[in-house]
Image (cartoon, rainbow, N blue to C red; front, side, top):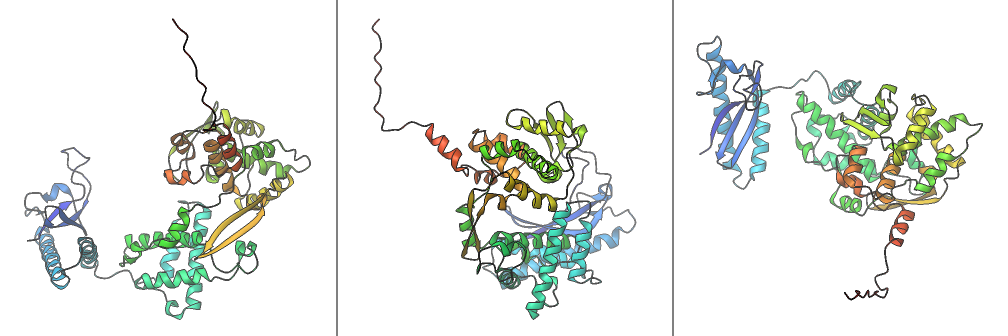
Length: 454
């Protein structure tokens, strides 16, 4: 028979300590079905640990307000047990995971009988976007602004979602939203595709929209605006699209020879392009994100080491400006350790021009997908170059040309997932050919070496 137990979230000052936590801490109800099946249900009740009766799981009776406080806890435990019994009676084939999810949602409705209804869906989204200022890069904030615009446009084309609410965000909504994005009229980079293939966002882009939506809904749930959790079941990509991603993407990077040529190219009379080229090469030699490059401070340079806290991951990072990365130190010295300042939008515009002038014009084909439709885009390489190309170039060269240990590359770039780097291995056709040329033909005659007597 199921039972309930009340436990404090953080009863002690620190793990392993016997000193009670001096701060208020949250109470959780544990629904114990058996030894291996327990459900942790969050409540909105908080208490100081020194006021808690650990043996009887209630507020100490001698304290003011204890009677009313403990009465609420008893009713809560009874309601949870009643709901659980109703659930397993009505749905005897429900899995434990489904039971746990339902009980946790029920716990929220018991503790939060009504939500903040002063703001509608888009007003809450505006509040979320405003909360991001100073926390993330302007480019990230822009993504959520784009998400908002796309949801508003969905409402214009689909009357069912003209007045969007949190309760509408279910699997049917996701299907309708995905369908809308797959049929979006040409705009921006879509217009650079071949004629007749410009409609619809790429699958990768749609996946980013879904991820942004989930991030917002999670934020809204934490602040009691959203009590619906179906969004947690959303996948950024369909099963078929995940298979296409596993086939690998065509990643555009500069070869080692192209990078050397670009770095040495004479931009006499075009100082703006020279500065943009230097910023790109600094990124290509260090492998760092644009957000960290644009924030580089002279005080972060210690001899031949760049020490900084990564803006995105907040990790302490040390980049050795030696060996392959030595040209980055030359660039810093060239500008007296104050890299040129330029907006990311202008950088991505000018770097294409700089690469074109330098003759980085090898024809490149990339494959992308809109739903199940393959889109093949063929352009000179300079057309595909942007700020992130520098970081990709660094990863590709370190892995393919210098065979650097993947763990070391992860430490340099700050990537958290090994899978992210695996897609870069042998993307450089020239490096791959050079690597295979250094191996021996397995069919070459064996050389027999006779040992000398004595």
